[in-house]
Length: 283
Length: 99
Image (cartoon, rainbow over all chains, first blue to last red; front, top):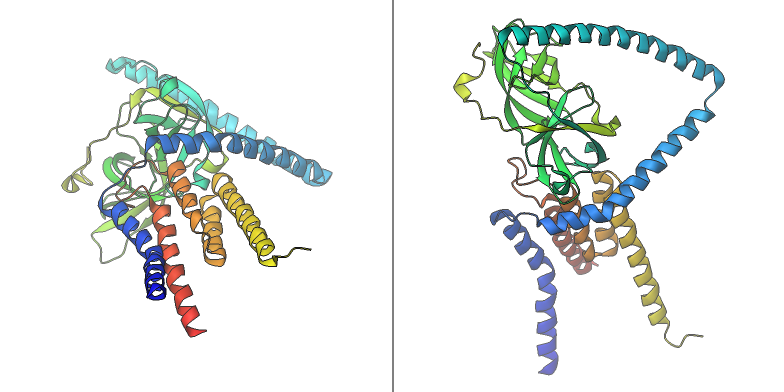
């Protein structure tokens, strides 16, 4: 009798092993459970020293590899970099001229805005380490960071917005995150409002009517007066039977190589969703 | 000479498991997400390390930034590891009954 009792109890207890996880999965899916803030804070607190150490080790390793390269390859690389630098200087000069012209035109239109207050922030854990297309920055609510603040690359390309603010760190979600859908402006031969949806890893997708003229390399910007580019049209797919063509837009910034970004503390990023019927309408 | 060799074996097994747990948690914190997740799944299947569900919670706590349309949950990795835990149990039962 005692033997049968203990055997049944043991069997019931063993059955709990697969049942409890399945119950937990059901609860997590159905109850929309949110991650407790203290847990994220604790995880970031635990991980931050390790991330800093990892970046330091990776930096010193890069230096060691460079010093082991042959003299010939270093000379070649140096020449290539000098050429790139000269090209970039020319581009920078052109950009300065265009910026001055833009400011002059804004003044003429009477639309002078205060300069955005940009704070340089360090990336602790970049998007390569995250499946949600997010990255962690080293400022939090204690430093004045608020949700929806815009995050830009050092060159001024919009990368994403702050989605979760913790005490000393914040999580930034990129515009290309798979769940993101937002409005943007395509600067092609004519200006078009488009609805972008993220595909992950810096790639976004939009659809436009076939007859709208778009070329690869056209710029997509945020729909605000402080025009910050999001990406460039990388590929256009137009099947003969479709009334729409699909644009694949890619961010020109390689987030995996970035160590610092700029946080715009004067602008928050909350874009009203564009109606399906408005997609592709000319402005 | 140890009179209870099974105690020694159990102790060694425990040490191995703790070392593996620490390694997996380290990978979750430092390496890209797919490395940490793979290591956690392998350790759960090979060593029956149920405690590594914590690695999933840690991954979600570090990276997730709110409920999203794509994932519908902030606990994507926790769910994956919980499902792996259940699947491993079922597989073990099947293999035991066959053997």
